Structure formats: structure tokens, C-alpha cells
Image (cartoon, rainbow, N blue to C red; front, side, top):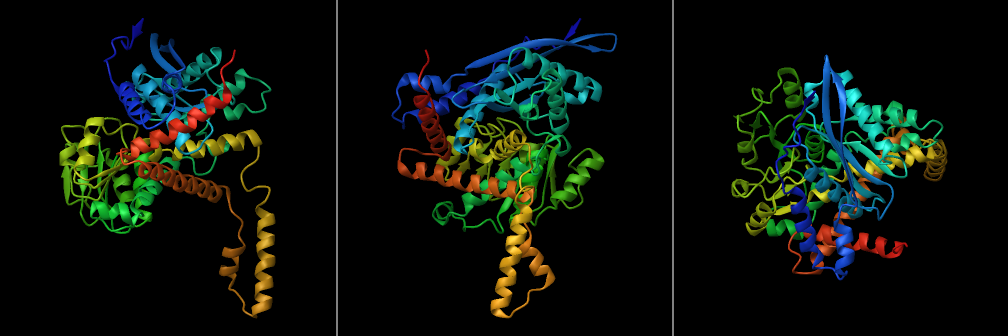
Amino acid sequence: MATNNSILELDTHFFADVCNNFDYAAQFTTHDAGLLDQIKSCNSVYRFRFPIRRGNGFEVIDAWRVEHSHHQSPTKGGIRYSEMVNEDEVMALAALMTYKCAIVNVPFGGAKGGIKINPKNYTVQELENITRRYTVELIKKNFIGPSVDVPAPDYGSGEREMGWIADTYATMNPGQLDAMGAVTGKPIALHGIAGRREATGRGVAIAARECVSIAEDMQKLGLTPGIAGKKVIVQGLGNVGYYSAKFMAEFGGVIVGLCEFEGAVYNEDGLDVEAVFQHRKATGSILGFSGAKKEFKNTGEGLEQPCDILIPAALENQLREDNIRNIKAKIIVEGANGPTSPEAEKIFYANGGIIVPDMYANAGGVTVSYFEWLKNLSHVAFGRINRRFEENSNLNLVNMVEGITGLSLSAAQRATIVKGASELELVNSGLEDTMIRSYQEIRNVWNSDDKIDTLRTAAMVGAINKIAVSYQNLGVWP
């Protein structure tokens, strides 16, 4: 029987880094040590192995599901499909989900899952078998359910896999009315929600926009306020990176660099994000794009080119002590989870930069997942009940204004004013409001104490305080 030898996992320190950030922030709170330990600890860690048939034999798959905090129910977090995934990483990502949900005021505890495979090495049928078996293992241990633990996509997984999970859960729980609420990030046709696919990238772009909108903060960096004309480098052309770059360009930023694992392209006058994406789709590489003035086979060199804003939207630990001094950006907006090491962050701030932390910046995905979960529990699409009522009310208002003023609007103008909000528009509105309000909360904490030196610490302080209130209100039973 073949195995993937994942027992011999390399020791990592991602969870320790998250805990160190927590401990540093905790000194700016007034909570007792026991409560802080409860908030920091992973409540449930489920490590399991299961076989699949492959060819004429078997392969054993290693997998995890971690529920970090139950101060709110259900817990929430994606499932990562990666041959690099390990228990330490899943625990760290689950903890970050707890703090992330608190930061953006989404009522979930944090969780995360991992399946130790490279999806590219498996057929679609094999991936389906792995996903469904993983789901059954979670069901057996009560680690999934609309009121228990709600998975979502993460690195290496997407709508297709979430559809398989939803079907498996519904099949194993016949007659459960809210079965589709057991997982988010599903296809629209399977009770998903408009805007979920691009939600994380849109949230990253909104986070960057909010950061650069504060004139006082930009003056300290030697930058003008506003996103228009800001030069941006994005690492990663996956779901998060692609949409981050797309919306940054829509907001007025100039995408000067794009980086992927095979290399990077750069043009100080700007790159067409969609054209680069299609070029990579056609050729299998970001290199060789005709619109690039420079290209680098070492993707790390792409991160070090001149720009105002750098968005690492790939994997963790991309900005380290050995390369952070070469980063020319004044602002780092973390689209990925944990892309900046603690040592690198200290150096970057000491050199006059600012980092918009992952716990806030990439929270757009879980925010819209929350909207999808609400949609699944209510069994009605947003806007379906009230859209026509809004349009009739708006039409009556337009008719009244035209009657009073004697002016007549064009058909196009009337249509724009009268139109009721679609589900996508309502989702995007809710996401934008969430990201704007959350950034202001973080910045208020940052400015409340001179000793709170980074936005990450400020975000963590705010998260700790919110989670502590939840635990205090719950009490301890028995």
C-alpha cells in the first residue's frame, strides 16, 4: 500500500508566529491570563488518514480539520489542498480565521482544513473521491454542519470541490432543511452567492484603497492620498491575486508588476492584467508577455521592483528578513495568509513602511461567505423579495419630481435611478461597508496608544477584546 509519507513532516513555526503576535498584542489589553490562553488555544484538532483507490492499488491521504475557537458558532474556514500542508499550518490558519472574523464583525469562530495532496497530480474523479471521503470523515466526527463548522474554498480548492462537499453532506443528512448551509463558496447553481468568487480580491483592493485614503498616514510615507496613479505590484495570479489586481486597476491604480512561481513581468507604465492572465493561460507561463519591459525568471526579483503598493497574494513567508530590505514599496497589503515574517515586518516599519495585515485585508472572502450562509439559512436570494417594491417606489419618486419640476429624464437616466439592487450589488455593498468600517476600527485602536506600533497589532488587540467579551458573556459551564 502506497502512502505519501506525510508522517515525516517538516517542523514549521507558523502557528508559533501567530501566537507570538497574539502575545505581543495581549499586553495592550486588560484580560486575565486564563482568558487569554483560552482565546489563543486551538480547541479541537482532528488529524486523520483515509485510503483511496488509485490504479490497481491504494493511496493513503493525510488530512486535518482544526476548530480554533467556539466563542461563536458555527466555526468557519477554508480547506487547503496542498502537498505542503501540515498540522502547524492548519492550526495557524484556523487561529487567523478566528481573529479575522472578529476584526470584520462576522459571527463565526475560526476553523481551517487541509488535505495533503497536489491537485494537479490527480484526475477529476480522484479529486472527487478524495473530497467526498474527506467530507464523510468530518461528518463522522461532527466536524461539519450549518450550525457546527462550515468549510469554504482555500488554496487548491474552489467552487467545484465545495459543490461535492455540499452534495455529500446533504446525501448523508437526508431531510435536513439547511444542508446547503454546511459549506460556502458553492457554485451559483448550487445555492452559492453572486460575488463570492471575487470577494477576497475585491476586499484586498478596498483595504488598499482605505489605507491610502488617509492623508495623515500618506504624508508620513511621502505619498499623496488616494489610489489614483499609485503603482502596484501583485504577487500571484490565482483567484485572490487576479481579482486584487483587477479591482486595484478599476480603482485607479497602475499595475506595474505581476509575479508568479515561474517568474515575473514588469512595466513601469502599466500592465494589462487581463492580457497577462490570458497569456499565461495560453502559454502556461507569465514570461514572454509582449507588454512587459522587464521579466525575471526569479519571482523574488519581481517583488523588489519600484512601486508604491505591494500585494503578496500567493503563499505565506514570501517577505523575509533576507529580502525585505530590497522591497521598494511603501505599503504592503497582505492578500495571502502570513506572507510577511515577524522579523521582516519590524524591518519594514523601521524603514518607514506600513503593512495592512492579512487578518483584515483578505477578510472579504469570509465576509461574503457569511452572506452566502445567511442566504442558505433564509432560503431566498438577496433582493428577490424587495427589488420590485424598491423599483416601484423609486419610479413613483421620479414621477413626482418630474411633475414638480417640469423636467423630464431620459429613458437611460430613469432606468438607472429606478433600478432595484441585484444580489451582486447588495453583496458588494455589504462587503465594501464591512471593509471600510473595519479599517476605521483598526486605525482607531492604532491611534489610541503610542505603544501599538503596527496595524497588525492594532487589529489583533481589537480582535482579542471582541472575543474576550463573547467568552465572558458565555460564562463557563458546568
